[in-house]
Length: 162
Image 1 (cartoon, helix red, strand yellow):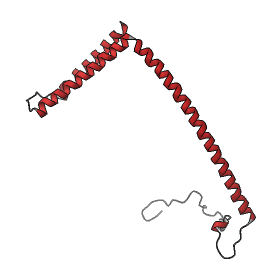
Image 2 (cartoon, one colour; image 1 turned 45 degrees about the vertical axis):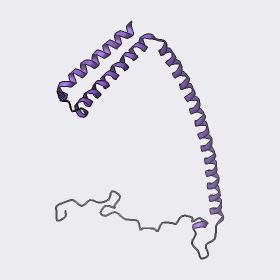
Image 3 (spheres, helix red, strand yellow; image 1 turned 120 degrees about the horizontal axis):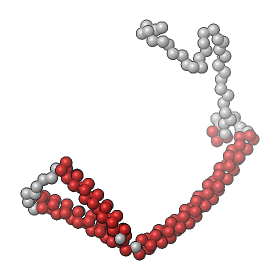
Image 4 (cartoon, one colour; image 1 turned 180 degrees about the horizontal axis):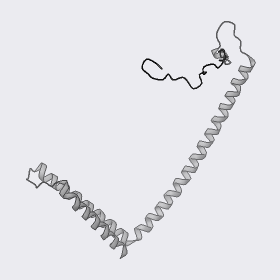
């Protein structure tokens, strides 16, 4: 125990009391390539030259394989994009011929347009023209918004059944 009554923690690989410890050995230095070899008589060994050439060959092979994979991926992506475009065009033409969907989309776009127009006119009259518009609190407005959205969903569903 220490003076603060805290246990002393030891490293998990530290020897326990009574165990023998191995003497520390210096690490063996790795082979140093010729470009970074220290000056003063160090020579380029054949094993270093061969391993650096082998590494260069492997990197060149990897580069060729990566380029081929990139080209293959590009061709596959282009083909998938063309297929997706054709499918989307077919679906768009089919939906365009369905009068119920065209009518529902027209009604929904008109409703959103009228809603945005009403909000814009409200702010224009209140801020720009300085008219005394009644203020609406969010706690009073959000239930009305839910009712309008729900009514729109129901009417759109009825328009699709016709």
